[in-house]
Image (spheres, rainbow, N blue to C red):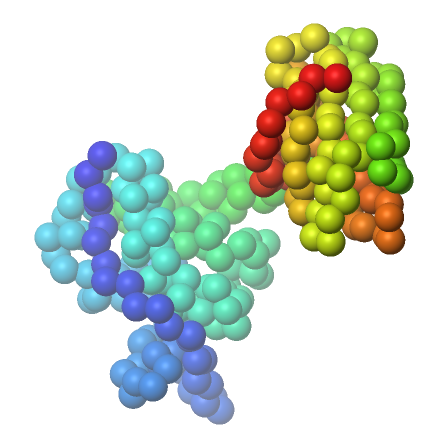
Length: 267
């Protein structure tokens, strides 16, 4: 896939400069006297982009398919706009322009600008309201899914002493995990973590069975089905005991798996 937009990205902290009754808002790079004009709205963005981008890049951007052009611009031109037009900081009048329309995410703002600029160059309808609705609907659906996942999440807290074993069964109402159970044994305790043996049985072929060292705060994925997955985490160490939390989430996986198994020792 061709790179559609190539922009030199300079890491800056946008310093928004305001003036009483001033029709212009600018941002300056820290330690630099150069001022970057911040557009007020989409039409102003189009005018400014035509000024700052080389003609050949504008032409290449124009000729590319909309989806490709916007995707490839995201980490180049898009990042430049987010950093230098106050979208990331959220305190420029361009950011306020989008927030007034219900668009609050800087990535969404730059995405709308890139999409609209491509359509503008190709004399196509901007359909701003439709674009705004797309992002609003996306976040609404995401929030709904996150809420549902949180409601469905199951958690068991285990406190184990040395060589103690805990067995948990049937905490998830799911056909694929109907016969699911897990056994956890504390094998060795150290100041920064613990060696535990885990036996998981879901009959899905994606179970963890073995011994692993977990540092405090680490997760280990122990089972997965088509609809859910489960992890165990070492929450804390209290004297000669450990506190572990077993969680089962609706797919896709929620936490990052950070621990790696040392040896396999099926119990």
